[in-house]
Length: 217
Image (cartoon, rainbow, N blue to C red; front, side, top):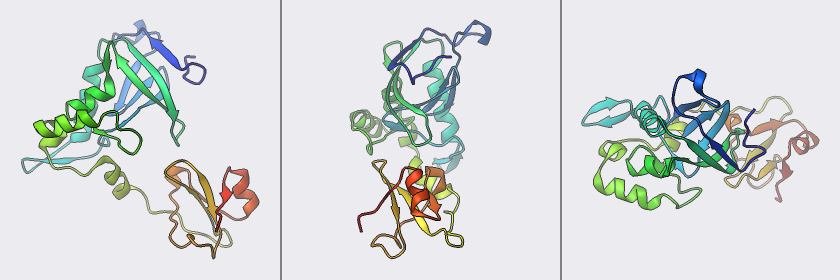
């Protein structure tokens, strides 16, 4: 099976032709995600509307998430895809810079207003976003909640502590896994979101086995 785990560069000489002709089929999941031969790929440096997200365009509800997915599908169609892994996200997906021929898919998505530059991780596509904003194209021709804000609004309520399981295992913006004990400085302000891999623990040993270390204070 083809995998990014063993290769930094994977040249997929596969075209968007009938599935029987493909060595590793490419499926567009949403505006910033691909499935290549069963491997989940998140495009590095951009954030596109969620698939079910809607925006407001000229006073009308617009399925901007689905539109973004179709824009990426158009870029991928009929092209050889080459990806270079940059990272792995908290959900275990490969985060990669991918090209369709000579086109950087992430840059093209941002430049045509189909995704935003994910400045939390890189400024690589900031100029492309500025150009799209200035021209008022794609998402910038509509009113939208940012993809990140949309995810926060639609996320399930954080899990509550139960019984004696009151230790909070938190994952910071940089990926550090810290657990907070009742009475520590940041305990009350720490919110736990299981979707991000965060969790409640009953004992310190349990938290440590899960890869978390105790907060300094």
